[in-house]
Length: 244
Ligand SMILES: [Zn+2]
Ligand SMILES: [Zn+2]
Image (cartoon, protein in one colour):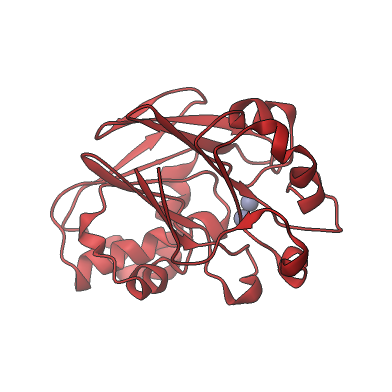
């Protein structure tokens, strides 16, 4: 399994980083975990062939995590012509929100049929999705009260990768992260404590006892980025690859 961090930034593009997108390649499938609005810039900067994408899995319906889906549609409609299906997985409301966003951004193109089928799958927590040789399981996390938010657990060839999406620090998240091979964990703040995001001190205090083979902080906001030299945990960079 190879994970390429296409976007390690927060909603505000702190530090000039791209919005959330994690390209995940497993035997038999290539998919994105989240698809922020900067998806095309981020993919093209690492010269990744967008035609290889099989599916998009969205953690939640905040703009920095799903706002790039209409841009993917435009890419496949005009620049990288596509005829094979594109699967889009996400929590309840995914189909309605993606269609509404496409219409808001490109009204005429959205009103026409695309030259490829878009297959929407709205997932319940714990429902496992097989993609290639991977089994992907959405895990409910605590983010904003008005949305269902998932972390995703990706298992392939005896390796496990957990991507937190946006979440508060909870015991349930810790239980899911314990002992995984790769945990990409959001770290939006440092000194500000919120009940919708994780601050650096919260994850730093627990990092060792999680026993993850590799822990990488991402979704980095302006506070942790201002103190990058002080951080003792590995931080993601746009374009970095993580092999496991
Ligand atoms: Zn976010
Ligand atoms: Zn969010």
